[in-house]
Image 1 (cartoon, rainbow, N blue to C red):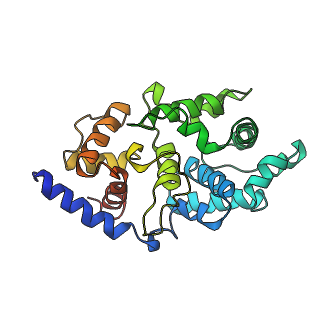
Image 2: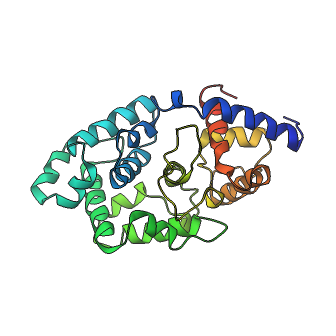
Image 3: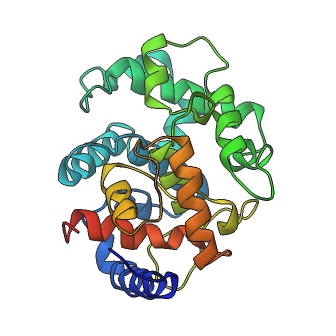
Length: 256
């Protein structure tokens, strides 16, 4: 498409407003953390829902909901109070390549984080810069795998230090950090602000962004993510990732 900067901004503003609505919640993985009111429950439910977010949306939501049920629908209490025998409840939990061993390690790693750090939010925020949360994601990855773990589990937590755009972690951070009056993103964290966030970049949002000439890099990697962030920040330096709603909706629902 050959549109001016102002035309692209107006187009994305319109689509963002269309998709950033409460009706969006029900069929989206963000519905999982919306079930809870306690901060730590929201964090853990959101982290698992984001981690499982690849494949068909209905399957993601169904499996994430089932995982919460296996944790007694009290994810923080389960993480902090579980004993080894309790983890047997996860023996048959599978989502694509996410296996029981991965789920069990996630539980152990999250407990370690809550025991050794002030909060999950603190792990991300302590290393983020004023310009970007990417260093915070790298620090989180290091922290999450700082205890003994199955090597296979590392593939389920992306690391920008390896060139990954970390789509699912950036989506999780959008959920936790963004605050507006639309009621979709939960906005329960205060140590980070939306200006630091990166847009979740995947096949669909990447294709839309390329058609709108927001990125030129062909691969969906960290370089492409930085280019997309720069483009979106020119349109709204304070809340650039709100346009994720537009890119996602255009790609998934409108086959743009």
